[in-house]
Image 1 (cartoon, rainbow, N blue to C red):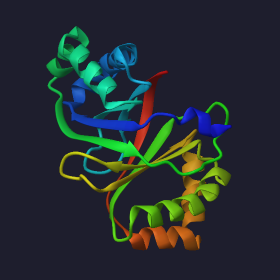
Image 2: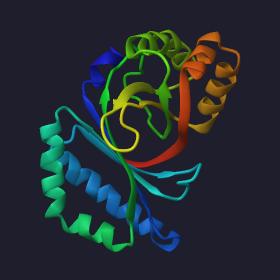
Image 3: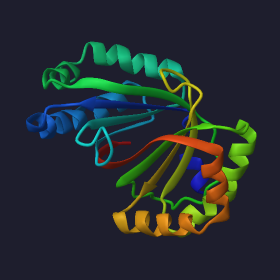
Length: 212
């Protein structure tokens, strides 16, 4: 079932602003860095670009870990990596890093998810984590029906947004995103989620490459 692919416990999202003329160089270095991340201990890693919002045009690096020790191992490897120093050499500045712990809800995912786009929604909740998870579990079939590939829910552990919740939903193309947002507009559960969350970030990421 789709549940098995979602074993990772932690999610690390790093956003880097980079001069526009260095973006493609930073992305291609990011492809190599994702492979190094996987080799050093992440369950999965991907590089992408942010398409919308204040960070549009930034590089985004997503890493998935089974344990925080694995994250520490990867950071140690990056400290010695020439790829990492080259990506920093493009003038990249890290503008955001969130480490989050997954609190997953059931989702019927396809056997081979096509994660081409990710919509990340971040917000502070007015209701308890179990109540919010119940609402997310109630909403997840709607996302599955409109073509979402994976549906992951997490709570941020570090930084300015510690305690906020993060919903990451992946899609194979823009048309499924459109279908999902049409469905959300008339869905009573979605309305309850939005009234429970003060959304402080919503962004679309185009995934350029994933090391699995």
